[in-house]
Length: 271
Image 1 (cartoon, rainbow, N blue to C red):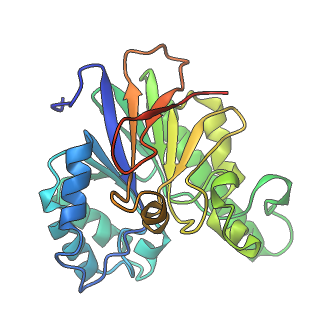
Image 2 (cartoon, rainbow, N blue to C red):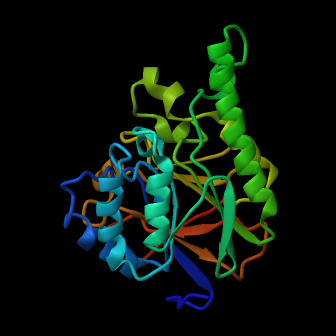
């Protein structure tokens, strides 16, 4: 149980693509303190380090020391670059974060499923498992990540569930990036589990110049929280804050989302 800022709602601050480097010490503490003050839970959506090294992970852990709320994270492709994602994960866990990779957790009644995700493209243009073994292996990786997400969601029995990813599950939130990049920014296979299980909201990063929000085909709000994009949308507070009413009916997917750097929250409701 956490000490929430409201009895009936829980606020999540979400951001991804921090790309912490060895010389990033001291650069993010004010940012993390601000996010911690604004929310009840901090969500980190991958690419937390730049090259996935032990030194970068240590710097990130030190920067996170100012956070006074629970932290839930997934890794991104940059966190795998040096071939030691377990080092990044273990360092974050020692710093108090819950790092999800096909697992789920619960915080104050809200279930959280997390997975890195993978590439492959969207809709009818998504890559299929046909031809060379390398292509089949690529698609298998996307399928495996989608299955991990489905397994995590299936374990949750909460009325309210959110999904934390690195790669995008829909094309809407990568629009604005060069179209040639779309297949490498996410995959529609990640959207399939989100349609089979009731989900209140989805967060991802990776698309630095995409759109801040979109919806799945079933109307679930999807938020792209890449830090570079958040700096454009919320220059005074470069992270997304949403508020979930934990007392609302199970099938109510409305969330309150701050659309300005400060001030009241605005309602985004299911169409």
